[in-house]
Image (cartoon, rainbow over all chains, first blue to last red; front, top):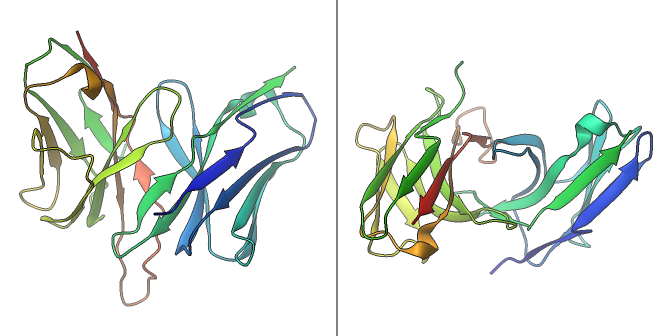
Length: 109
Length: 119
């Protein structure tokens, strides 16, 4: 069974800081996903990657397949980035997601 | 809005009652997933449909739970004889499946969830 571990569990930053959230998993996967969840429950997919690095605006996601590790970086953080960031892996024929427990990010003005 | 929609957003019911939730996926998506999320945790997989066929079920899906997707479009999740431990957010997601010019990995699009509270 795949185990997905995220760190840190909680993160508080000042506006403008560079933020890193880490994710490790235990078995081979088809893809790794980074998602954002706001209060109230809605989940938005930020990235899906199976190798290398992807960038979208101020967000960067990287994955190291050999190390079974991924990171999500936020440059020039802003209070509107405050949310729960969740790492998930997909595997199997159904590609169902196995989720980490999330990182609560709070960016202070 | 052509995103995934779930109904109702909130459901409060007494222990022992039956509840049914509905999910309308993005119209061209043939894959549909149900997940459950308890407070402070990441979501957990419950079940998966490809078109109308239910192809995978988690061990979390006890005999009191049943899910259908009768015409390969919307899906329902029913919980019979609800228990306190069923209190959670129930999330639906949909995605495209593999195709001639499309890999098997596709991003999943989530609804806003149905929050179930058992009194």
